[in-house]
Image (spheres, rainbow, N blue to C red):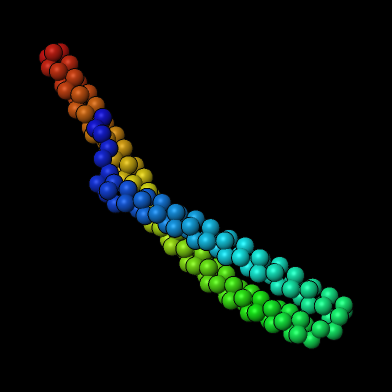
Length: 151
């Protein structure tokens, strides 16, 4: 039996490599998103602590300057938190785009794998036809020789 050689193997290999690159890019994007989410959580925690400080300062003494400073701190931390929330949204969008690219690369690879499977099935059918033809020729030859020997 002949050896199967897929004519578009180089394209399939390239699609597999592209898929692997997209997987790596997706992983990196998800990692970055997680880092930014951690930063957002840290900002939120810092703001909550500053708000608690402000509440205690208002309850304890009426030092206007200290209260204003703590209010400013809270406002600044709120601003940082909003900025970080925006950054997280941007990275979520990047993750979504990376996932779409990965899905597309996976589809392309699967298409080429299906093409390879179909080509292999055709190859097997053709090999079976050739083998059957050889068997038929051999049987015809033997039958012809046996008939000639009888005459």
